Length: 452
Image (tube, rainbow, N blue to C red; front, side, top):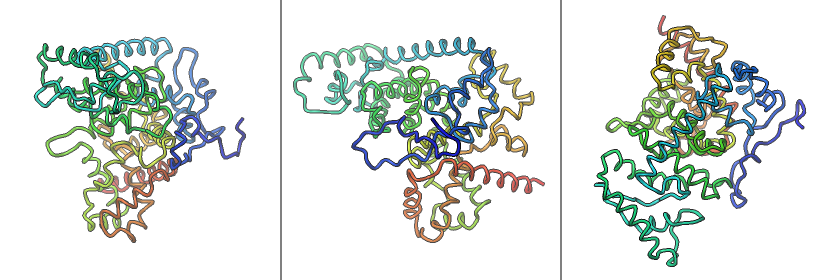
């Protein structure tokens, strides 16, 4: 039982770490009575029909995060999977429809590569650049594993006729069909997804199970197929992993990840020689120049004016800078602060939903249902159509915290990277969000002065 005024209950026990991993940083997040969104408060936030009173919920999440036992279902609202104005019945209908859609996409992928959905995955290339099947020994082994990790091992007993027959069947079926450019591109990515999967959150007991690794590979493979423009890029496994841990049903985890990618896919989109996240790095440079010109000048002198040293922070939303538990706490605070009540309707893909979304842009949204960060943007008259994400200000807050050290100790870009890397696992999520909000407010005021 939690008592008022106590330091709170540690949340690390909800995400068990493998006993041999002794250097994993402890989480600073604590489950606190009266602050953390509890199961009771969450259930009380719903009207009898299922409408969610989102305003108070956002405030509580900002104050103390979400209890780990309800994190998954809360995130579905924060990410725009469901409209808080929907009923229990409407959400059940939407959930079933989406599960069916995911199953259809997954089956489409399985028809192209039968390992999808088999509980296995690959870490070696399966086709060449011109689409010809590669009968790699590692693929032969991986596609015939019953249990255990998908890694190469000396197992001559498992490389008999049945194994060759299995991969030959896949190859023959592939040869019968004429693969188009999209399918070739998709299959070229499957082994890279596998390589990243076995490196993702490897300290967690959860990923000791082959089925969980395979589930992560399946979701990322299906996403790479349906989003042909972006496909798969390194870093996506870090973004998807928490969804699988928090949501039991694979399709629900997929849709949470898909909604998160709606926000972040621009970061991964390549345009010639540039990556989408570079525009955010440009914004970060402008923000740092405005709020800490001395630090910005120092970074430029060191050759870091492009701010590429912050690339990883923005790409994987600080998964390296915070412990696993704290990164989840940070994410839900970010999403609560940025929350837009029109999010779910804007994400709908049907024509009817698009019409509704267009209409919602015209009507005034209730400021009480928006997150604190979003409210500040609305009040300031900032560019609502293309607002800066709070993640940029979070990076600025990290730089602000390390400003004195960067100014006195950084004599080159390697020093900048080292100083920032030393923060890994040691940052305070709550403090970072509080500082980010202050920097955001200061930046908006300076922008208003310039406009006038």
